[in-house]
View 1 (cartoon, rainbow, N blue to C red):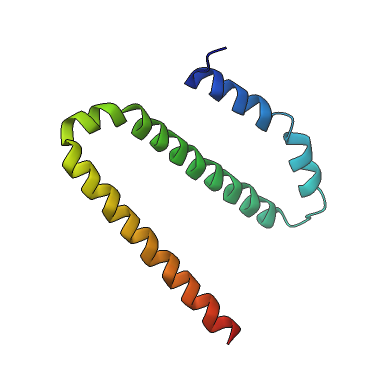
View 2 (view 1 turned 45 degrees about the vertical axis):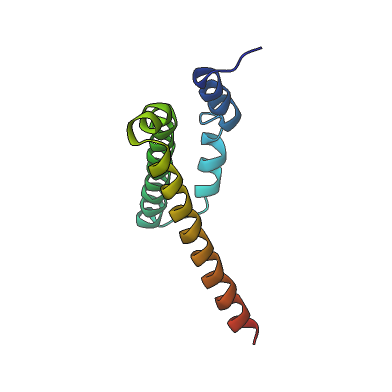
Length: 105
């Protein structure tokens, strides 16, 4: 069986079950009496969902255009970008490690 982006998106929607989570979300909010706090929680959750949607769409666009981008920029530039991203990743990990060690000491 061959998988496509559409079948993966449908599977993700079925697994997440957005309509099935409405009762769970409503029952969680029923004990909060302050309407302003309820509104703040709902808005915050919508902002998080919107940010995740933007991240997923951005990833989709990058993955769909990867072959064309590779042909456009060439092999040497792609290798340079890969090394640069690896260097940034190592720098961030070393910074996190040092902060963790400082927290223990």
